Length: 262
Image (cartoon, rainbow, N blue to C red; front, side, top):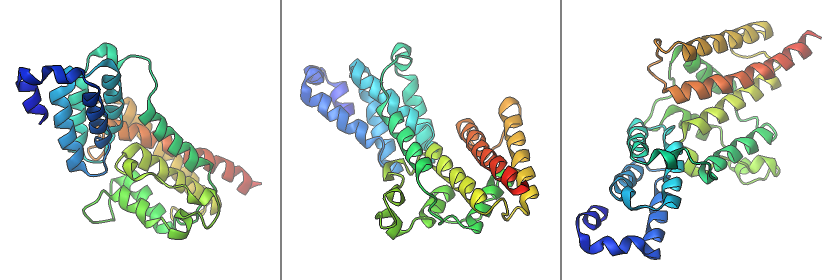
């Protein structure tokens, strides 16, 4: 329909109608759908009508693209990266509120302020650290392994808030395809697990855990600084997110390490 509207001059007056703006807002909402197929179809439609969007809608489109650039599906990341390049640079760099980005920040802050759920187990810790260290995936299936890890750690009584107000916080379904959110969730859970177990993890004793995590951060930082070296299993944005998030584990480990030594 979007393609037909753009190809015919008959529909040009419709672009200034409030109903068209409402249609575009609905289209932008669909862009963050959890189904990658819907995300791609929406992106194709947005590419067709992007030249007819006003500044407000273009700014909202930029926000959507920023979120989808860290989508777990490569095709979605590529499609929205292509869409972002079609938006004028002055709109892309403009200083305005970012509701989609703020939602991600809010989810991360809520998760970090909640009490530990105790549903992140040693096997989950091993799977996460194994991927960061060696790129090994131990969870098969159609869905991305990080998303499956998240679902395996959810409990109905905790999601419903039975265990308390803090226990009812979970990642919105629309953000479950966002790698930045999932990595922040996973590594923070690993940090909580490390602290609660007093640094005695599947990596070994307290000193072994501390030294392994410290080496992990140094390795990730080296890859981030050296553009000639690439980690094929991660995008640049994901590597940056993991490096920063893993630092949280290290900071928590430092605190636990001092307590353990004393």
